[in-house]
Length: 576
Image (tube, rainbow, N blue to C red):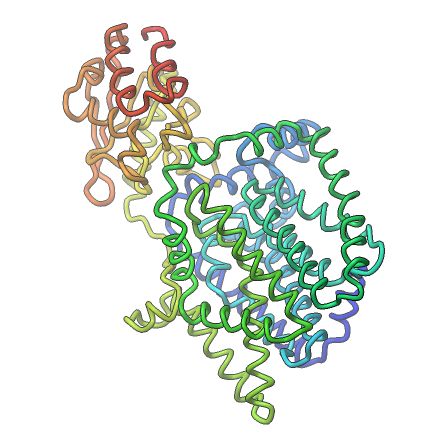
């Protein structure tokens, strides 16, 4: 099996590669620790959501194991963000601690480092197919671990990097397949890894579809190259893939029917339309800029070099088609965020390594140490630019990624704590429900909820969830029953105002003496970063039917095609 081959390969590494690799791991760990330790930030939404859930699992999993497993199963079938990965991290977090630094380091050490080792081994296997792309193992490892796109999501609290390990195992298993005979074991490994990917993070279904399509393209290239064995290749591919596919579909239908139904029939293009900007060309350009010209050139050259080499051609076609198809499928729904680019990470790396290895062997056979030094320097400069270690310049902004990271610093934590403490006191004294009409990175409901992480998971128990994306969340019924409303002035958006009418319409009712705002008394205000005034209002009179009709008409003007999300929710609520 490929696992035995991987460990045997590691045992055969020479001392220099082992020492260099160990040094790379230590250096990366120190870098990540230093960067994250500088944060003074409130981790909200995706930044802190999984961290908080992981803390909860770490505290409760060993006290209530059956309940936690039950909640895990329910979350897979019903929740957009399930608890598989937090469950995997529960025990390690118990050992390492609950701080955000510990959380990030756990993901790095448990999943990112093993992924890098396996992906390095994958490229070494490619180099056995064509030795003109061969590179030292430690250099391969350094290149893989040098790309900024690997760390940016991690530093922002995304745990999606966990999925990269399954992707690396997928590519390794694919490289191990014997295409000329029955090989059910490897195809079952592929099926299990694909299911695990999709169950961990639903959007990795785009990678799964792209991966299967890329395998088919690989088979077509093999059949074209090996005309005398084309029937044998096609026959065994169909037989090998059929049984694991049927079993996987059966498992999903029997155990994860809710997940499958939501994945296949959920209208994600509407729900996430607020995150869809531009056409396909615009999105490909955005992807290119996020990589930088340096990586784009190496990627393009890797495709060309792979296409010119007969033995590598099917593999280059597979990696590039996976890269392209995955993007096309994803762009049908929305733009890619920094964490979504994990869908492309492995394909980019393997093609970049093909180019780098070919240049290493083709032009520098007698000056390899000099070339290795140049490679290391170029990739370190590429990475350093994103993290501010190299001064920003016009040339740099073209050559390197346009996505950068600086430590996340908030200078208004004390003001936020004062606001949060006052709201909690109001809630504790009367059980008042609180709704926040703000949705930016400076103020939103989740910031007030998670302000005291990791000590307290949910600081104000009666703080209701806000509607932050109109066509995903709809109108918040909790607003109609809220006793206290928090409003920011100026109005706080994180998307275009047209996609956050809930925030805009409700905020304007309070800030401009609207009909809805007349039901509330102003209590107090606070000043946070950028001179934003945060105002607290307390309900004095319930809404009348006429006021609810007025509010319904406001939203029906923009969303008449979605009555179940807006009009019906408002009018079905009793006056309160």
